[in-house]
Image 1 (cartoon, protein in one colour):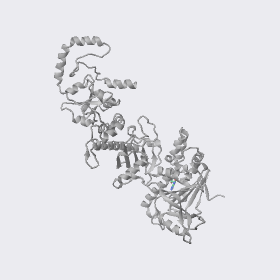
Image 2 (cartoon, rainbow, N blue to C red):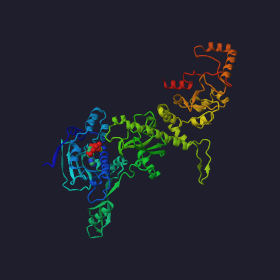
Image 3 (cartoon, rainbow, N blue to C red):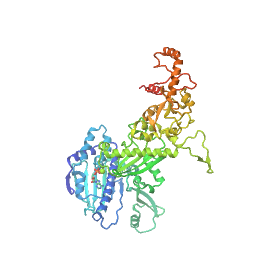
Image 4 (cartoon, rainbow, N blue to C red):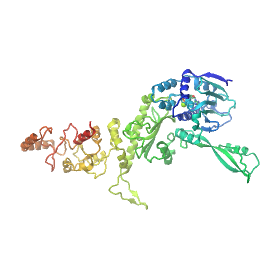
Length: 629
Ligand code: ADP
Ligand code: MG
């Protein structure tokens, strides 16, 4: 016997359903995300419509139906239900939205499945193709959708089984059980019974719904033992309570105790809100406590994650609007290590209207991959797939802005924490920092400097900003790390260059004969101790109009002497040491480019081996050799 009207699925939809129903994919979990996000979308739509056409969308006899999504399971019936109080669907909408109207995403999804070597990942992105609803068939062999739209006086049921080519639509025999919204019941497959379990659902729904703005709750059951004193039917009294505090209580079983007949077991149902902290980023900063920021950080980074050292919460307004919340971690996150570029998790989550679109999307460049956070925009279409997303102009604008904000966040942290702050003892008196003490920023910097340096090298538009974050030991800093700004501040009046010298460690560089002249002139020298540092200063070229100059290069100049003096001195010595130079030339023939009188004063040192101005510094040569370029 046919139930109600029978409709044929649009051909492509049927083909897709066939694949989904018979799928052997392992990550079936996505279905819950899809159903929750559909519920959340439907509430969004209702909210919008009720604002623009309040009369049409008002529910008869109800002032306000709460905006929420509820999840229920029944282990015995092997069902799982997701119910929302969103816009609902009329009879015709059920027919067209869930099967007969061709969606462009269907074809795209099918093509992606065919092309992708990794069907699992395509399936996990099913929602991005605009066909998320059908993921219900990953776990259910029968799906029943009951829906009540404010535009239809009758509640209808949509039902389909086992990848059949058709579905049925009929008035709900139970009547209008919903005030408004949609109830989706999944009749779970034998191999999907794990989903009729509170722990599993809690885990999944928490993961997917922490970012949904409406409360998502799970109906759980608790057995309680109560005193059975009254003679009257307890279910009636409890039902009254139930209406008040959203708890259903029903007598499940009355236990006959041989001693006293005074106790009975009651099964109580309650709703447990799973997303206690919904969509923090959409709220006003002023209304958010540090505790809430902390809790959200752990949602993003995991319970075990170390505290962050800074965050940035901002709204971008203009042609493109979005909200974002970024966190600056104190430890390089496990998911992110320079070198492991292909890690799936990227630390940033992209939302469109509070619906999670991707958590593996490259929103920040590689060097900022350690930053965790969310971006949520109303200006991106919901039904976009990764490829279109990557190319989206809107997203390019968003990315640019997020990168700037991320760098600002680090800069702010650096500015606030560059100095060693006095610690307080038990009596509240400041403790003098010892010689070994390092500022909070430097502690952080030591862990993240490879990222900052890579940023300086790769991110040309932000190079100037990033350069401000760099820190170096110098010939005068006594082991401390200083900024380029600090170096420039300390420069001699005549000084036009930032003098640098490379080596494997600060101790080694400090012993270098190249430092002699600088010492004599009381000039500070930056120590380049990281392999990457030499590339770095090559890229920066100059800082605040001061060119970097290698002390080890032959043409190193000090502007405290006039060009004339240098020329005269050179001429004098050239003449004086002519025989020596000729002798040395013969001696080192073929091993060195040339032997000449130094233009600079070498202090106590009679001779140095230097590199040519256009070649690599000696240290760079060492690095290149080590890396076998
Ligand atoms: P998408 O959500 O990307 O549009 P889906 O396959 O998830 O694609 O859903 C298809 C359509 O079915 C939705 O666009 C919507 O019109 C309708 N729909 C699905 N779930 C609900 C719901 N819970 N309430 C109202 N409409 C829904
Ligand atoms: Mg959807």
